[in-house]
Length: 335
Image (tube, rainbow, N blue to C red; front, side, top):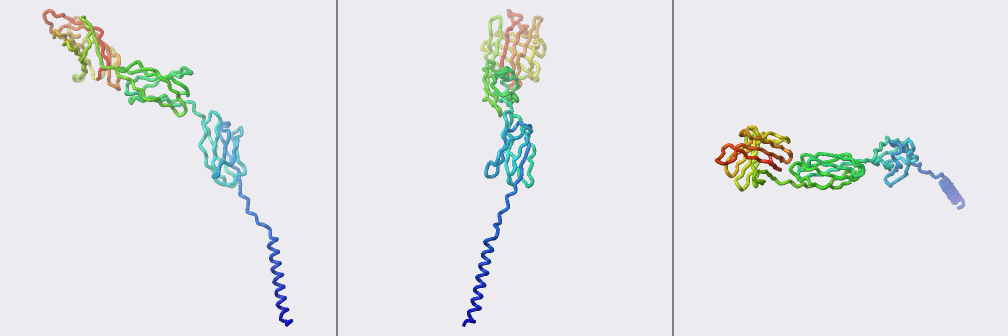
């Protein structure tokens, strides 16, 4: 019996000893720490120096750090964890903030390419639209502070623009084209960053009118008809008392200037209630001139004035040998 328990007891004692020894070894093992995250320096340069007051670096969680560029424009962020970042720039007065920059900080550090900073704009465009097109010959913008005057001509669509006007308040004046109301009020506009567009300005057209003077008084035609005869133009003025005056003019397109009314191509003809024809190119006493004072090539309108002495082509008994027409004028004749 004694011999049976001795080996068993010995085995138990040895096992307990091994277990105790094993447990003691694990307790005394050193704790293994995870490796520290790798870091590096993110650096860059802004140009010109002094154009940026601060540079902010952010990651996916938000802003991480802010740096102030040195007097040379250099900046750096030491000790940043490797990874993706975004740089944002705060401009100094007089400069425009550059776009944010996405960068990746790699082992050993990353240098961002030089960021060039633009000056903040001090000018912008003042623009507008005239209705109808051709109603305005020019637009003037006067700087209220400096008194400097800028002038542009509207396009064939009526659009106009003053590029690169210094910021500030301006008085805008429209100079009407031939055939349109000249009494246009000025208005104010303020040029700001990004440009300023003023509302569409509508200009009223003058009515088509005519007037001339005979020895018997003024004649106001009630019917005005511009027409084409071959390659030339003619305008007929009539009223209700059987008076008709016609201007025959050379060419399909009028031009500003004065022409004689004593030629075969340019002449005037008057028919009165006595049905006698008087022409400015007939007879020894005949004379006359016509002056085109304005031509609107966009609206295709023209205006002018005239006077003439017409000799009788088919005189009646007792009819005068000449007729004198003075103070003749017409406005907004189409061509």
